[in-house]
Length: 511
Image: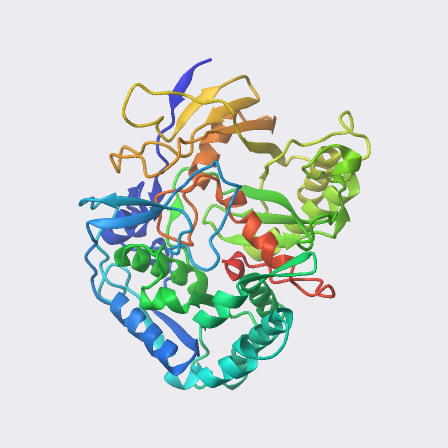
């Protein structure tokens, strides 16, 4: 077995500028969308909250319009594969549940923020028409929700209805310019009591419930949920303000304008990248109902989300925890995804790559659950017999490598096991930072492919797709974007109304 180091993927920005770091690329020439003529110079927003919360949010956004010097003490989220795949914080990328603290000046890891305005490298600014803001009185929050003499389950419903009604009111009665995004400031008292509650043997999560209820309105204006304590800066796990500004502004630009902050240089434009994952329909402990979620991405990171029909997976009967799909189900799911992908992208891919965090069963493994046969048939019937495909399983590996250094194995370390299987470190020591930005010993991915593409090429693509998360300005993630948010999307979808057949399919709605 030979160990190699893959080159760090380059990403492209305005004026054909290439580098490996989003913050450096944006600071140097600006967003990629400035070159492909999709750039937006304004992001119109409005806010839901109390008068104090709305005012505080405006002050925060105003502070982002100016340069912010990075601090010598700062926190970053810890990119570890020891946790469940795509384990997400509850509201924002810069509110980290597990942090790594640094002390000292490191301008590559924690660069100054240049200011989000028309004259800076962003060439864009936030705009607000205060007439569109929706004020909720503090007394209403206390009387109708927090201090109401009802069960917590009813309080959650009231809180969600309060914010949902405000969102709908803005859309139906907005003045002049329709907002690109509606920001909801979640009250501290509501969050502290109702963030996650248990009702009988079911858990209810406020964020997921609220997000799903707003998605069910199908109004096509993204919503941004933010905690009151995040705006005030009092949340203990909060990052350095320069990092907050970087992450927030990049995410809002992509989310509201649907523009491309950067793109991958060396990746096939004729390939559709799919991630398939499975999730409980609701959070009852012994529930066997599952949903399938497929996330499709093109070269520019434009993402689509699709949900399949509910199905039952009883691990006590199958003796296997990870769900698998019956042939017809797999065929129907992938056909639906590819048809929509062709329609929205106005492009027919010549190759399809499917990522999954479990093995692909075929008729030899289990005759009833021939998901491999179903997917291949769906691809061929939808796109044509000449369409190439690769079915790639991506799992955490028990294999570990050691390095004779004070730092762990380098990100990009690749070991080919055979023609179909390899080990890849997507986290680890990063030479650009001159450090390892993590608090755990990095764990590699075990990658196995069913298809004609060489395994090294498959790993190179996965490596590149770890740099396509537009929900922040981080250097990279541990998982490719096809799977990075699968859990988060699944958590929201389980709260959607049962009679909602076609949830919004634009990826940024779930960010």
